[in-house]
Amino acid sequence: MKIQYFHKFCICGTFIGNNRDHERKGDVQLSAEIKKSISDTVILVIEDDSSIRNAINTLLSRKGYTVIEANHGREGLAILEDFGVDLVITDIFMPNMDGLEVIRNIRKKNKELRVIAISGGGQMHLTESLRWAAAFGADKTLNKPIKHTELLDAVEALTMGNSSDE
Image 1 (cartoon, rainbow, N blue to C red):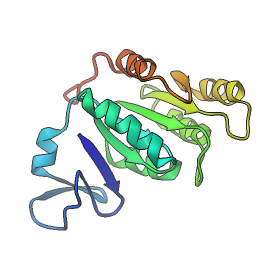
Image 2 (image 1 turned 90 degrees about the vertical axis):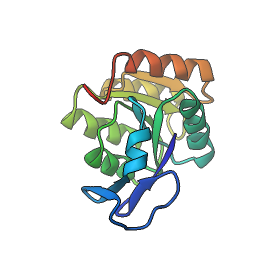
Image 3 (image 1 turned 45 degrees about the vertical axis):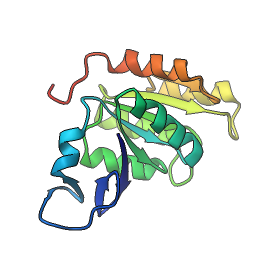
Image 4 (image 1 turned 180 degrees about the vertical axis):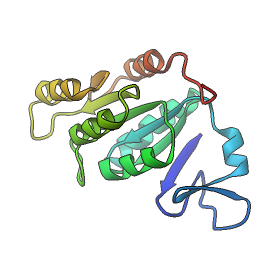
């Protein structure tokens, strides 16, 4: 299931206006029917390139994961304040807050949350950026372009045993 995040408004597959059928949690609202359809494993994808973000979302959604999207690091951290997620997949080079800073912020608050860092290189050499991501606390690093099987294997390995009921 694809979930888009509208900070200060709602989280939903399609925009849902303010009505009494929503439950508030912080600045975000969840409709009752969306809450019922959320799978056990929730993955936050933080990626500024919409085509890559959509491709990851589609791949993971088809495998039964619930995916929440963020366009940049600050938006991703705001989502983490409002929702419990099982895994974060973050790009390294993004505007408004890069992935290294995202990983550092996650590790300050939650040492257990699993993180996959992805990068195509950007300004830093590819291996250097991913090495820094691992040093900052990423559990797994992947080069772009990402092979579907490689991403799915990493997600499965890092989310094994996760459940929203735990």
